[in-house]
Amino acid sequence: MKLRVSIGLLLSLIFIYLSFWKPDISGLLSGETGLFSAFWGQTRIDLKGLGVALSKAHYGYVILGITLLLLSLFSRAQRWRIMIKPVYAEIRYWPVYSAMNIGYMINNILPLRMGEILRAYFLGKAEKISKTSVLATIVVERLLDSTAILILLSVTLFFFPFPDWIRNGLFYIGSAAVFLIAFLLGLLFATDWTIGILRTVLKPIPQRISHKIIRMVEGFASGLEVMRSSRHYAAILMHTVLLEACYILSVLFTLLAFDLISPDYPAIDANPLLASIVLLIIITIGIGLPSAPGAVGTFHGIVALGVSLFGVSAEASMGLAIVLHLANYIPLTVLGLVCFWTQQFKLSEIKEQFQKGET
Image (tube, rainbow, N blue to C red; front, side, top):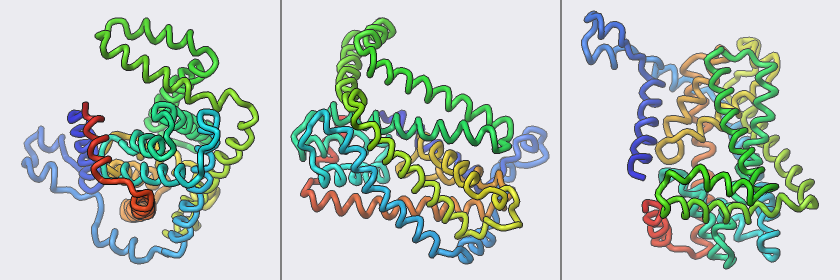
């Protein structure tokens, strides 16, 4: 676990560095520049220009985006509640909503996206249901989100002129997501067969570890029960579409906040909706990368790079990335803390569960 934390922190630092400085490796190797000049001599972003971009932003649009984000949480919580109902029919809305927001808050303050595991713990404790089954519904939730992003990605690959290196990278990311979806569908429709295949794959691994993995996967399979009930499909689909629409509009408002929907940026002005979808996909990738808590650094670097694809200056791109990150980070962290205290949980529980995660 310490290795994964270290890798996440290192990646965040690398993204922060590359966002603000231009290393000159060739100059260092040729002896034309010294060590310090090679790594710190060329800046990528003018801090004064960044300050101007932030000062000129229209924060009323940012507030609209935050409002959409907060409203979307009600729909996301209801979708999760629908997924849990086959496991526990009497599941209440408020504990689901609280646990979800507590999870987001923990993701913002602890490494390794521990909030995904801990929100299963807190909901399981509040409603006295299997934490493993709850965790499985979170996997289903991520499956739905990944599927929605894959659909959006397939659309943008046809209509947006990504550079080849980004297009290739998106292809590999999409392929990995398809593989994961296929595995989860195998658990859903051919559980015994899929687990049998997994046992075969895990044979070279020590038995103590492989048995633990198998037990976890079997628990996940039980949480996929909701997907076997077609009566829930329409409601789940409706909430998924509503969530993606909220996220796209939130990005669109951020573009408006920085005056990027204008003739000065024809790639955005020609189709603001497509530009918002492209940025949403890039944001999703930025959040998913290993990083420091709250995706600090990786989020900023990836989003700033994505915005620059539209011909936006480095200063305005980073300004948008900073504002978009804070617009997500602050409300979700505050709301999670409020839910945590109103549910009367204790900080010692987070510490205890985090220590279990380390082992």
